[in-house]
Structures are given as C-alpha cells and as structure tokens.
Length: 254
Ligand code: ADP
Ligand code: MG
Ligand code: MG
Image (cartoon, rainbow, N blue to C red; front, top):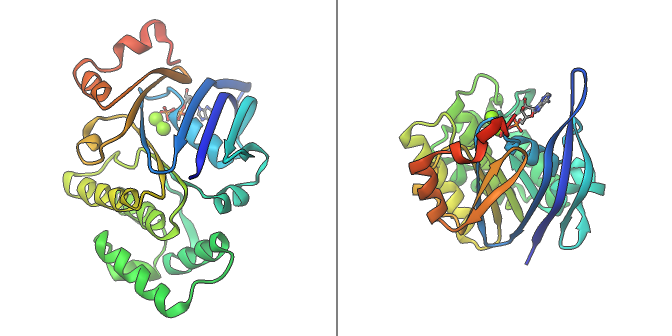
C-alpha cells in the first residue's frame, strides 16, 4: 500500500521582489485507497501544495519532508515523481502545441509504465475511457488543451488519471468552472479510479459541491499555508454552512 507522508512542509515561491513563504508547515498522510479533501479559501496555498508535490521549479522547499513509501519525493525530478506514481491534475491545464492528445497519452503511459503499451489494447483502452468521460473521439487528434473549453480541459485531466492509474492523485480544483453535467462526468471518472482501491486521492477544492459526488474519508481545512483543522465528512457540512471566515480572521490567508 503506497503511503504519501508530508511532514512540516515549508515552501517559498519565487515572486517578484524575492522569495515569499507560502506553505508554513503542512502535515498530511495519504494512503492508497483513501480520499482526502483539502478545502480552503483562495490564496491559501492549495495549488502551491499541489505544485510542490509534483516538483514545479518555481516552488522552493525550504523545510520539511515528503516521502512516498519512505522514498524521498523531494529528491526526485518531476519525471521520477510521475514514475513513482504521483499524478497532478492541474487547476489550469497548460496547452501543449504540436502534441496531439493521442500522442501525449501514449508517451505518458510509456514513460510511466517503462514500456510502450501494446498498440491494439491501448487504442481500445483510450477509446473506452474517452467514451466514459464523454470526450468526442476527434479530440484524440487535437493538440493538448489547445482551444479546449474549461470543462474539456478538466475531462482531459481525468482521462489521464484513468489511463495512467497513479498511486497518489492530486486533483487541484478539478471541479472549478464545471457545469453540473460536466461535474458529474468528471466525478464519476474519479470515483471509478477510487473504486480500484489502488489510488490515494488529494481532492483540492474551494467549494463543497463536488463532495456530493465524491465522498471523502477525511476533510482538511487549509488556511494561510497550513492545515488549520482536520475531520471527517461532517467538517465539509460545517464549511458549507459557515464558510471559511473563522479560519481567515486577521487576513491570515494573505
Ligand atoms: P490557492 O490555490 O489556495 O488559491 P495558491 O497556492 O495559488 O493558492 O497561492 C497562494 C499564494 O501564493 C497567493 O498569495 C499567490 O498569489 C501566491 N503565489 C502562488 N504562486 C505564485 C507565483 N508563481 N508567483 C507569485 N506568487 C505566487
Ligand atoms: Mg486559487
Ligand atoms: Mg489554486
């Protein structure tokens, strides 16, 4: 069982005017099979946490540890993290001009599995996954995220999740900007992957809405660069009623 352990993580971002501390001591353990919702106000550092775990070069770890089954994740390159089973669905997926969805998926799968997937089964696998996510087959030949709508980008992130089958999935506001139908399709995709029991999920969100479709085992409130409170699903109900106000008093999120 894969276990991601984050201990006292401090991260600074290279901002104009010098480095700025964003994460101020994050502690979190995510085991395969578990779903953790990370909820927090805008600017609290949720994406910084996601990027730091994936190895984005703009974010500098200044303290703490991150391990996956005891292996030092922070010492790994972005590629090594992906091969170790860490997957990030980005809040704002980036365009990859000149690379088709089909090529992108196959290249990713080859890199992560260590060998090219058998063409015949792979084509079928991709086609079926696209059907489940209601992605038009013509998308296979389009360039990654180029001209995709917000909802199409998010469905493409979940397509990767379904095909790459990571040990730890970090989903950064996959629900933002989705209408109800797209939210349901995306949530069903996440739930299919969860049902395998093989993935530990970090579901980062600003809104409680997605938690009607994806039931978390644990809920954490993220504020001012750290986890301010942890609990079960009932904590999300409390947030739904009371919002984040209690956690951001004194402008702590800035
Ligand atoms: P969230 O995802 O919770 O909305 P972010 O992690 O995106 O929060 O941002 C946390 C804080 O860090 C914000 O104040 C944001 O402006 C700042 N920040 C994040 N990334 C950068 C960056 N690349 N350059 C400058 N500031 C950044
Ligand atoms: Mg934000
Ligand atoms: Mg964010």
